Amino acid sequence: MLEKRSRMQVLAADAPSGSGELLIMNDLPVYKRGRNKIQEAIEEAEQKKRKNKIKNRISAAKSRARSQEHTRFPEEKVEQLRNENALLKKLLSLVRDLMFLLGNCSS
View 1 (cartoon, helix red, strand yellow):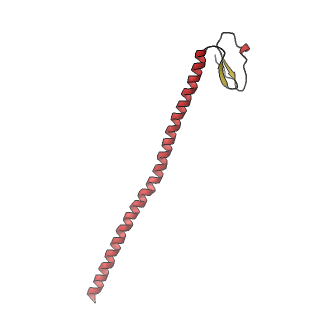
View 2: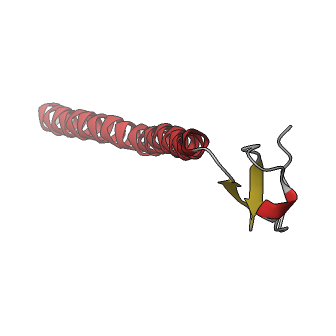
């Protein structure tokens, strides 16, 4: 039926007249006759391009989500460590005050 030939030119004279067969010229589909078939080929190429754009958008969104996940975890860990550090500083201050008070009471 339709035969694709890579990097070869098929001359219109080789196809039977009025056949509307697909001719390959420099890897681009060219139809000898029939505007509908040309339009179908154009629409098919546009549909393929739209499909690839959609796939690319989905892939980019997944990539951004992975990147955000990698940055979110360290940020949460830093916040947790800051809170823990502040709590330990308060505890240390209380212990020092208690030791000072106990030191003054025993003398």
